[in-house]
Length: 527
Image (cartoon, rainbow, N blue to C red):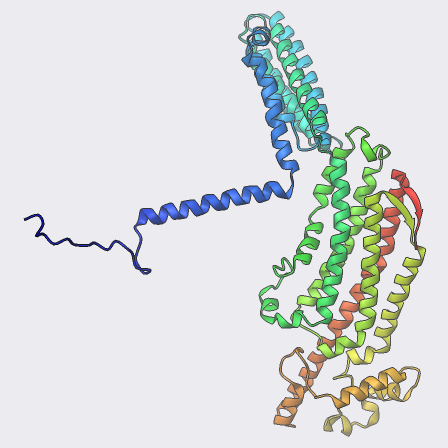
């Protein structure tokens, strides 16, 4: 009977369109989220290895002060007061050595003043009797809280706001926690000792174990900012001359405010420089507290010059962002008109970017070079661009580089009714204002097809003229010609912003030279 039974095969394979159970979906989703989290953590740590170093140093400091409570002998001396050492490490330990020393100074002064005031108040309260003692303690807490909160708002005391906060909470904790103690004076002194131990461990670990210097971070960040501005300037000019912005009309309409350009990494880095003011000032303030070390031993008093250089560099970055505004604006000059100024714009851009890189190289190597010839080349290239804009100004205000076509209405008023056309005719006859290069350009343009590549507005004026040469479209044609003139003026805006950027380089060079003199950079010869 058993052998006669037929065996059935069960196919458990799933088709590609099979629906998985809900718990399988959740498990798969949880695994992907965990993988993404681990990958993000590794990327965050690899971006700046000092972050891992800082975390390990905090753990080491916490372990050292915790051993005072875990080992029997130190615990018999300090008891539960050792918790104040742990609290001090958690509050004082900062990312850089300078920030830790700054916080340590505020912590030390604040704790010392709070301890002295607490001992005096406890002595007064104990001598005033059991009835008046709680009132004296309560009034002192109110007085200290009000006084420290008011004084830390004083403009000259704002940098030491953390110190006043330390005075407030240290005094309140000492007074309230020792109020019920048998020997409050001794308890207060032991807690001050614990705070001093925690501060010593914090400073020692942060200063001796792989120190992270705020001055070095400030130096490297400023050097990197120079390279970012130079790269952003060249990238913007290259895209503008190649008509890159004209190919992203939908993007231009979507981004009304110049806030972010996801397809321009160089622009994003330049935009980050504009938001680095607070970080640079914070690093400079922390660097002032650091002792002379390594190659920064002569930098006493030079950190404020770093802030000035960063401020001037941000002004240059503002101009680069304005150039990106021209690149991404909805009103665009035709591509064939941009070719007229291509040589001058490229020359000024390359010279300016080269100067920025040279300044960054000098700053990174801590050397000072007098770049007289390089500054002269930049000024010459800027003068050429300015003269080119002046020489071809009529191209920026007329249709396709030609004088505007007179209408029947204009002809009825005679030759004197259109002064702009008269000026264009005189400019074409005058050899001073129309050199052979300009006439060659006109001859070439006449041979080319009469259309505008990617120009604004998108509809051709010539096509509209062919459809209806008169009637109601005459006024529309006039408005569209004015719109095309406005589009051509956007090219002049780009050129003038580039000239303004070059003009600001003089202030940047002066700021770097002042920094080099203050920091005692090594003098070297340069072009």
